[in-house]
Each structure stands twice: as C-alpha cells, then as structure tokens.
Length: 166
Image (tube, rainbow, N blue to C red; front, side):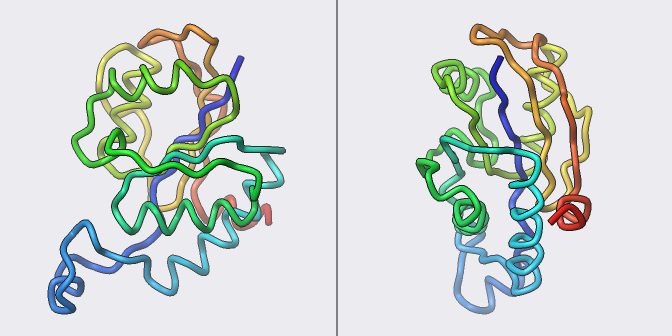
C-alpha cells in the first residue's frame, strides 16, 4: 500500500493583481498570507506523515512555491515539476506516473482538476467528491497496481486543520 497526498496550492494573488504587475496566470505568486499559512500547514502535515519521498508539482509558480514550502518540512523529498499537473491535465497520464512510484508522494496542483482526479481514483469517473480548498490535502491509499476506482480516501484536511496540528 502506498500513500498519495493530493494537495492544492496555497492562497495566490488574484489574476487581476498579477495582470497589473505584468504576470500571466501561470506566474501568479503566493500571497504573504498564503506563504505564512502554508508553512504552518506543512508543519502540521509533518506530524501526520513521517516522510514524503517525491513532491511533484505543476510548473505554475503558485504550485512550485507551495511545493518549496512543503519541502522545508520534508527536506529529503525529491522535487519534480511536470505538466502532468497543469490545469486540464489527463487523469490517466497522471495515474500512469503515480503507478510507477513506490514511495509516499505528494502531488501539488490546482482545482478543479485535483478534486476530479480524487474522484477518478476512487470511483473510476472524473467527478468531484471532495472540495479541495487552498492548501488542503487529501490522502489516498493505493495498492501498487491501483486502477481508476480502486483508491481509498484515508483522510482529507483543510490548511487550517493542518495548521492546528503544527
């Protein structure tokens, strides 16, 4: 059994703010509040999870920054970025990558895709079963050869709940 931690990026600047600053949607940064809250949430996650071996994030800046904060609590984790987690990703392609991982992994991405992927993994259909608030984490238990519809939600916590643990 392996665990896959599905995490939405922390609070980011609004699209209009980024545009005024000359940044595209992909370049939107975490707000100072988002950074602060994510640090507390990552500390809480470290109480629940002993080790994360791989942190895969979307290449969008807000997801990369969230993954960086997460890696401060899990410094041994290998950090990777890939388009598999950009908005509109193919759930089957992400599963194909996840299936080859044998360690506890964290996926840092965006809504509504993450909620849809959790639904895909637990029911076999891309439908939203959980609401992934900013910075929240959903832990999926999977076997080595998990197929769509075979994963189990172990727990799902908001960033505020994680922060309270830390």
